[in-house]
Length: 149
Image (cartoon, rainbow, N blue to C red; front, side, top):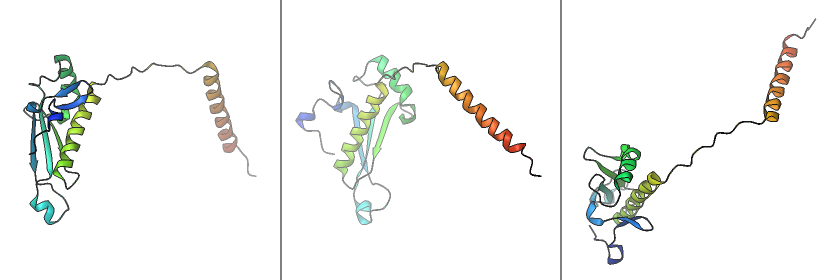
């Protein structure tokens, strides 16, 4: 697998000032499934990224706890976050996609959710709603009691 260039030496960047060191990331290439004919049978274009969350120095303990809960469906039996990309025929492009997906997963999991502010309908909104219900009920009642003789 191609090693990261010198400008990428900090690691996989998931925030402006935060990155996962490359030594914590395990990349594996394998043959992708699906259509593609001989190309798919001969090349290892599928890329799998594993990041050992429990042993990572890239996140604080509080962040690790949040990530463990948020990414529970992505964790394997060893506690590693697994991301797979086999979208394109290019191993390099699939690697870039997988790295981007991992960074996006971390970013989204650590973004605090906005608290919902409960609201109440206004008095006039309640009145309008009840008036509309009453009119609809009257209309149905009038339709049911009509005499056709």
